[in-house]
Length: 535
Image 1 (cartoon, one colour):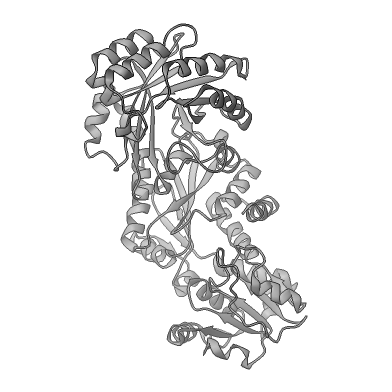
Image 2 (cartoon, rainbow, N blue to C red):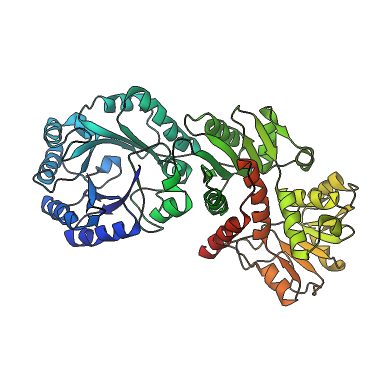
């Protein structure tokens, strides 16, 4: 089982001694004592005190780390000084369970090698054990193979730890792929992490790859490295204790993507039906080639077992092009819409593209109105915006005989969209945004990002809209839950449709595509609303 470790920076004994039981209470399995700036006497005090912190049937285990400034830490002393600190820390019954030494320090200093060789033993033996680590804050080491080979030559080590700064998601996927390369040459335990949001996948999936431990913060912010998740996120959101080798991986591809509540929705669904899956954020830069590189790497990563992805802004057009370019299939409606928001990965490598946005929007709308889809026929609908979300919604409305007027600041884009769907049962036309108040519509749907967090004071409509209790107002923005537009609609007693409802409805359809099972709507809805409330 992969242990969760909370890093504690030690400069004085009292704060560290106070923090250790708090870390255990938050759910830590171990703590890392970062003693970069600590004196030997302080280190020994803290090591002794940890025996008073109960964990299960024993006491709290620790990793002793003295990270050099060269590898992102604070220690600037000589190798002889470092050797002396190790020697003091490893004396007597309070020696740490694990001690981390940097590969370069191990190779440079015979004193460090001698002290740690004599003070540590093989896996499973009583006493301390050795971690050999390498951290690169510039990026993935160009001599990665040489670094891994040098680590394997340290016979005394029981765990190897490789960490580098991630510049793109490819660095995170590469970290996960390295587990298989390590295992092919050495049976000892291995941890590989890519720092920063682009590499967060390496932290969220460390348990799936059977890493010996992973680092997490006791709170939602802070930590010893960029991108470090909290204990609560790993345990409550990313199904930490359920991850195993067989676990299928899904995710949401976007830029940015850290704000998405889709992981909360889908992981709650997996848990509700006991499905062996986990859903993670996948931050991919806006360009098409970056999208292709990321999905190719994810699909080819040894041991990852990807099952599919949700696709959000700005990649929905890219997703359709990618699936068709890789010989996949897309249904007729999605092909005509021209964008997809879901890609399914079959075990044989075949791709299937879906657009669940239009069906999710129709379900949200008809549910709020208390009608079925044929009940929309003949309604007059004002759609604000002409982007990907608008395209899906216009397609769905037109297919069911709705008369749609598209309002957009760029009339050419709206006109092109209208031409694509006009006459597909319903009539579709385009009008400049400034003419929004010239006519009264039965339904108003905002498909622009206006009003989205953090710009919550904005609204895509003026305050003098001619709305009443017979009007339906639908805002596809889901964060905040109650946008300025919806607040205005509610004040006029209009029927309100929240953006989160569309998000939930399209996610239910995605979930069935991912798992082949009916979606547990209640669990997924509760998770979505809780995620919005928590901010």
